[in-house]
Amino acid sequence: AARRGWSVFAFAPLPGRVLAICAGGAAAGGIALAVVLSAVSSVTGLPLHTANDELMSIEGLSPLGMALFALIAAGTTPLAEELIFRGLLFQWMRGRLGVAGAAAISSILFGALHWPSGQALWAGLVGVGLALIFNRLNSLWASIAAHSGINALAMVLVLVLV
Image 1 (tube, one colour):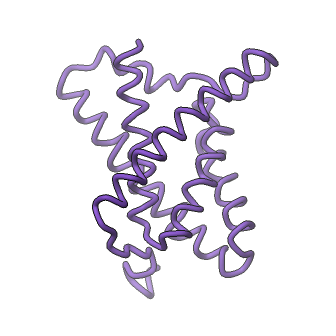
Image 2 (image 1 turned 90 degrees about the vertical axis):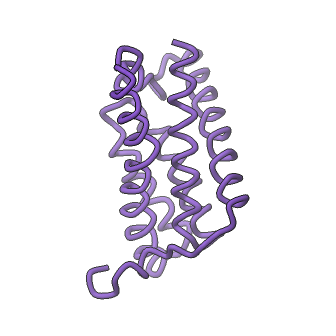
């Protein structure tokens, strides 16, 4: 990336409607996956998916704190994670291992990053979806929009349900 510049990240422009579909579809899919994993956890007793403590504690934030948390959770975090996991890692491995191998390994590492919050399996599965979205549309904007949509909807649901 240092040698080739920003072009290595594949920031191909996409129409706004495509980005909206990515954000909305991924948000719905991410929440559906969380519900399924939580249900399986309840039935089996296996800790497949737990609540994210950082997200659950936002209700006590001031309006400014909430705005900053929203900017970080739905803006800068998806941007940074997508730059690393899809923009660099997935693309680099895709040339060596193919789409399936690159999606699997980058998603396992993405899930491992989320291990401390109890979201490892969920994040790993979401990572596969983000890799496939990126691969299909060949634009990091698509996976950033999808990631942002998931995080934004999660924040809204916590505020409404907690």
